[in-house]
Length: 162
Image 1 (cartoon, rainbow, N blue to C red):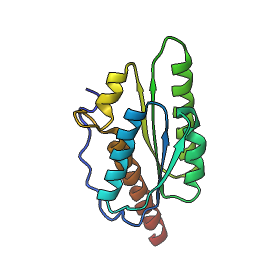
Image 2: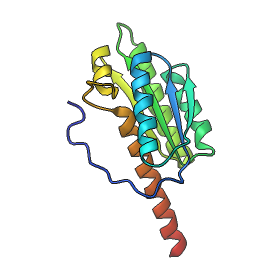
Image 3: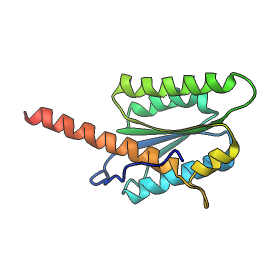
Image 4: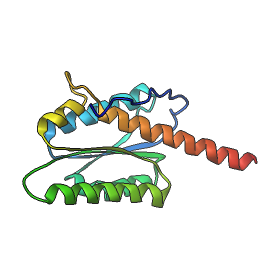
């Protein structure tokens, strides 16, 4: 299972972070699970008013993530691409991944990567955070983005005090 070995993160002092979530619309059941997991995790962390924006699909995630990065401390990108019989899967996965990486590096705002790239719908459902799912990639993407935002804050404070 892909989630084996995931760290148990302790996250504190993040209630004041502005977090944006951009979520694709394809594969409604899977996306509903990812969004619910992300929003629940943010609420559990005390971030009660995240910005939620819906993208038509995974390909559009980077441009909306960049827009959110302009005035947010962290962005969470959620989507799912299921392999088909054409090269479309590789193109969309590569473009979305490269674009989200570029957003994080160009803006300095962490982007939690919650883009499922799977072979089957069953694999997506196993990762969607739904009842009976083995993993909750929405939660994991939020945790990664928030922990990174806190680390960046600490680095910034350390530089200022030095």
